[in-house]
Image (cartoon, rainbow, N blue to C red; front, top):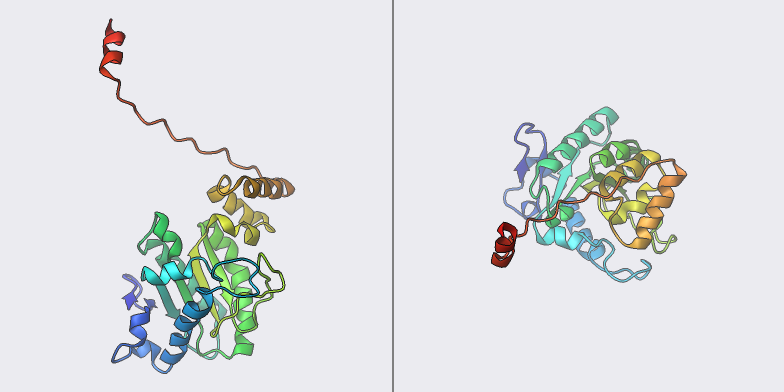
Length: 248
């Protein structure tokens, strides 16, 4: 278990913590439900699905997250939800997420925090989860992050390759925090705030076809696509013959 260095009320649990003896008091009575989330990640997110509409696992990053030990569970306890408290809790995990290793490099895209609401009845949780994701999404994308909603509804968002497939089904209501990636464009293209955030990070990433879609979406909202960042050319050492010629 990881405890926030400045806010001891925030804790992150790893898969090993769910089978440790004794169990931590914060997960007393819900360890089986949290183990179910780990099973769901391994057996659903990490596996292909016949209705997905493409090859590969449901989530391209879950296996890498689990393998690297950067797949974390957090809990919000209680059978009722104070929305202000929930937003503050999520902000705490969002800010902590940005400080957790790895903070950059290819491995960072696999880092995930799932904030679970294990005590909340499903019928109560569904609108709360959906509304929280909609409410907080702009603030997360401003920081290059994504917040995703999952519950047993499931959320009424179709897959990218099969709109009839609803992939955000989970055994517990939860909100997932992760880094934004270039392929998130379809999730951000319908809102000028989230699209502007995407442009700052990934305007020139991906295939030519994706970049054309990004430019077209920006044009619809009157947004300017940033100029590509150019890196200075690396210094090249002159050969001996070049040096002699230069001073001749």
